Every structure is written in C-alpha cells, then in structure tokens.
Image (cartoon, rainbow over all chains, first blue to last red; front, side, top):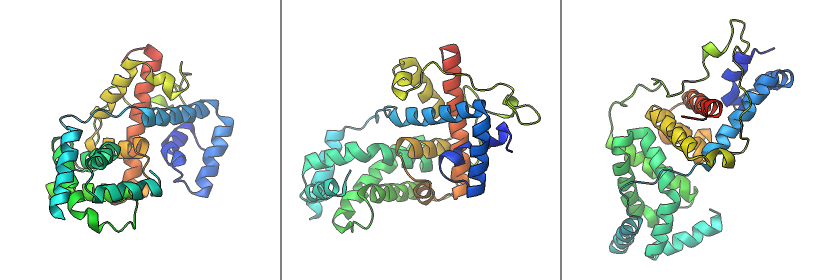
Length: 79
Length: 203
C-alpha cells in the first residue's frame, strides 16, 4: 500500500494519465481507504479547473488592431 | 476552433482580411506567448511572439493543414523563440525557486509517510466561486509569476491552454520526465497558495 506521501508524489502523473496500470491501481487503492488523500486529489482537480478558468493576464503593449493591420498588409505585399 | 472554422478563417486570412487577422491574434496570442515565455523568459517573450507573427504571415500560403492551425502557430512560435537565443538556457532546467506560500513538501508528512497536516476542507468548491474573489485571483497570479519561467510555461500550456504533455515536450524540446517534474512542482505551489488563502482569507 502506498503512503500518503507517495500518493502525493504520484498525484500529477495520476491526473495526467501518466501512470502504469499497476501504479494507477496502487493510487486508486490508496484513495479508496484514505479520506485525506481523496480530499487532496479533489482539491488538486479544483486547482486545475481554477487555473483553466482564470482570465489571462492582458497582453501589455500590444495593440491588436494595429498588429492585425500590419499583418494583413504584409500578407498583401507578399502576394 | 473546429476544422470548419479553421478553414473559413484561413480563407479570410489568405484574402488579406484585416478582421480575420484580428481574430487570429485574439484567439492564439495567449498560447503563443506562453510558449515564448517558457523558452526565452519574460524579457524577450513579446519580441519572440512578434517574430512569430511575421513568420506566420510569410508562411501562411504554404500552410499544409497537416496539423491544426494552433499546433502550427505554436511550432512557429517555439522556433522564433529558439532563434532568439541559440545558446545556453538561462536557467538550469530543473532549478527551483521558493514560492510565496511554499509547497506540499516533506514537512507535511511524518516519517512513515502519513499526513502530519492533512488538507482541510475549503470554503469554496467551484472555480467560479474561488475566482469571484479578486484578492485570490491576484494571489494566484503572484504565485504564477514567482515560478521559474520554464515551470510557469509548462503549467500555463497544460492547464490554461490544454496542451497534451507530448505537445509540450515537442515545443519546448524537453523530455517527458522533465515536463512531468516541472508540472508537478508548479501545481503543488499553486495548491499551497490556494490552501493558504482558503485557510487565512488573505494572500
């Protein structure tokens, strides 16, 4: 049986589907019996979802209209 | 973006329609910047993205559609960033930096590997509820900025941009095992920040 520490060490690989079949079973088995680690994994997933939804920091110093105009005109010049 | 959307957008781009370039920039600039940031760091990331846009325009008519538009754009960005610094990576790949709220480290476990200080329940259980607090959002940004550049780049590409680990390896030219290590370290630090905030209500 994995320890909690070993479970945490494998948590990213578990979430990313990077564990071997055997290791995945070991993690699942640990989670089945350990409420603390279940909470940890649940919170890791919440952390991931939070990062996914976080608004991107605005790109500084980029005028999108100006850049679009420049790219479009470059493209036309290339033709 | 679906294949149909992409095809329509490409036709408009090839016709030189300015609004199409605007849409392209707004859709992909964030992901391109994350790639550039991971490779050249904050100081040259914007320049590398500019280089990439010019290369995109030069090569657009030759785009073969063997990959998705996104993959193609990110590959061009990675190449542009690599051209900006051919020699030494500025940081040794796996060098680490301390994070504002630490990480989930050895001190959280007893000698036999059990939790000494187990995660406690958080007040919020949806991303929307967490992100509704401005201070937490700023706190998370602060932690992201404290990460070593390559670590942050990998985290952003994975979590915000949804790239597969293999794509990240290819773009950044680092091994899968290094991507896994960097991602895990970054996540545990962000986790520690969230935990700290949920516990104390402040950053």
